[in-house]
Image (cartoon, rainbow, N blue to C red; front, side):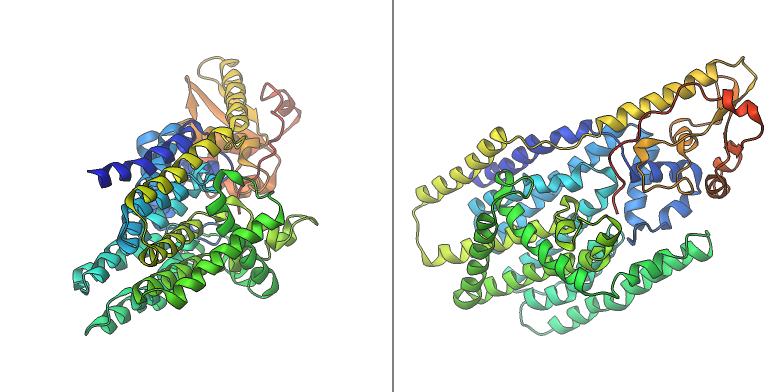
Length: 514
């Protein structure tokens, strides 16, 4: 009964911290994906890669929510919060399996589930795939841990299930590819050394062939069949030509992941003194060395497995993003890019599990009475609550993007109602600030794109709507869509100056995420 109650504590704390995201709004890439769902065939939406990621399952989840929730952001972010809560629930089980203590499971799940660095993922709906990768991994590794404890090997059916879940994670976000590729080594570390282990590992190792083929095949299908931009795939691999940037970023990711995971609200923005930064990293490193030198074999293997997961996911991020600092201005460096909160969801999770394994190994050698353990757990939980209550940390809710979207839709409505029923309405196309500066007019055609997202038909209140523009890039991009091909037309003559009603809102300061 006590264990069941402890399971609910980290879930309650995670909801306390992150429930406000249900009131968030769309921004940046969200609008691009909503635009494509309303403007392109479903199959094309499903296979579309983006930003170097493979997005088959993630796109399917997005499409499903778009079908049932239309453009109501509350339901999208409710799904994001639900995914995070499930991950906290699963993490409790994982720590319990590997650490053997309900108190450790409660503390670890609470520490990770409330970490403010996770907001970088949770506050952006387009980043839902990151959380889904963690779900797939936690389901698989929880089962793997239970089999390890029972010194059993998985059945063929269970291996097939793991395979499918890992492939699903690989098609949710780039870190899922890293997890799938490294998982055969994880299985080799964690499975009991009995006859048949090698066959399981070899079966899982086939992902080293399947995942790259799936990645390249999806991109080729997108390019050859649907006319996707051919520069995407070469650009991804071009990031690896200069290794220094990715190497520096990897070190930054590891350091920031460790400190952000353990300091929580005491360091929400990464501006702590260097002594604290190095102190946390040093203590974490010492704990790892102690476990690897003096811990039991089960603790050593589990620690190595989780460190490998963190290293693989961060290395994949660094390889794809380590040289992008060159595009972000003179003050950007690989290390400063590594502080981007969106890159820290799965890494801190792995580090928290390692810390719990260190504590579990220490508890086997240092016998403590139950009451002392209860006091330690209470101190950790109280510290999280107090730090959260006194912190000035706030998540982005994209209220500016909500207001600007409302202004644009209101301006379109005024322009429509200004014409008599049955008339054609021509509105001069303009930029749509909530989409951010990285979405060019070729990708997202401004007001016309917003109209396609929020209006189910090109006829509004008995009036046929068109948007006019002289932007050749916007016109070229619009020709690829079902609605945009006829909705956006070339601007002709001086009469265009009288179309469109109110001036456009000021450009948003936010940017679409790479």
